[in-house]
Amino acid sequence: SPPPGMYRGGIVTIFRDSPTTGAYFVAYEALEHELPRLSPYLAGECATFWAGGISGMLAWTLAYPFDVVKTYLMTLPLSSQAHERTISHAVQSMYARNGMAAFYRGLGTCLARAFPVNAVTFLVYKRLREILQPAELRPELRRN
Image 1 (cartoon, rainbow, N blue to C red):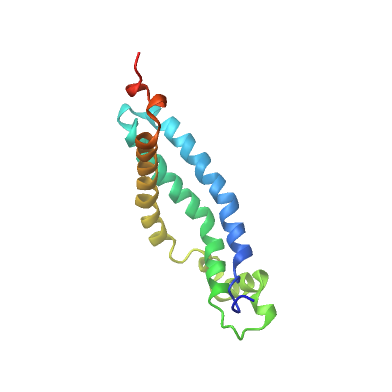
Image 2: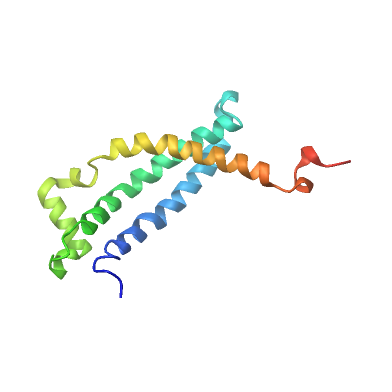
């Protein structure tokens, strides 16, 4: 049997990740497509960089309240009562103590990290995909 509390916050993690991952990739694709239309300086790797960074910030803005609730649940003492370990109790307790601000405290720091991390993630992914793609699928390496 798993250690007590091992899966605490698992449901909130699903609520956090499921919709925001979809929003993340939709935003990335839309931005990478639209940014070059705004300026020729926002094409190619530059578009990838900005689209990745902005979409990462969007995803974390949507996910952050869920992440705060997840962290609250995960850090409850193992001796806490069963009703204290519910999502609804966590949300009510946090809101009663600090209002809506409870769900966004620390968001600025999260977003400051999200932009560079996601911008670089997409750049590295696309570069590695180019490098690892078989030669017969790479137009610049095809023999005519």
